Length: 217
Image (cartoon, rainbow, N blue to C red):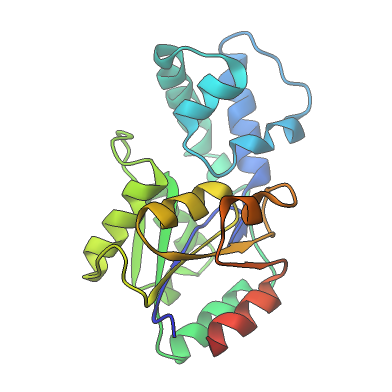
């Protein structure tokens, strides 16, 4: 049984598409880059933003740092709550807590934002620990976030009763680097096959399937 469950946030528990893509659109416009359709910016959902600005739109590291600040200007006041909880998530979290599991968040989103989102949607009550990226981006890689979560939980890399749950390859790869099993869920923005190719230990397509597995594994 996996007693300790680490959940990603974006694409795993909530759909943050509108808030993230519109805030990225806002940041790119600052550099004269016009993106007419924010739906094309979904690759930004999940991974850390600084390398994403560099990879997807060719910004230098200095520009990417500036883009992050512009992004946060909009996201911290508006985009944060342009978000919705995925169907079945509150019921799943409630059942896991009643089942005695230790439930935590391990997200690449800055930790203060994660807490505000969970509070806003009345989900914070279900979590024993919430870990996100640091605001200075020194802790932003998924591996570092998972390691911090393990430290706070009193667990160690490689512990077999810990499971990382997420919707992108970064979640799977971060778990692998920490010696953990991973569960990939296609409720987010990964193209079909990404989670299998990344080496997820388990893969599901719906919250219901995932909940059944977690409650019986």
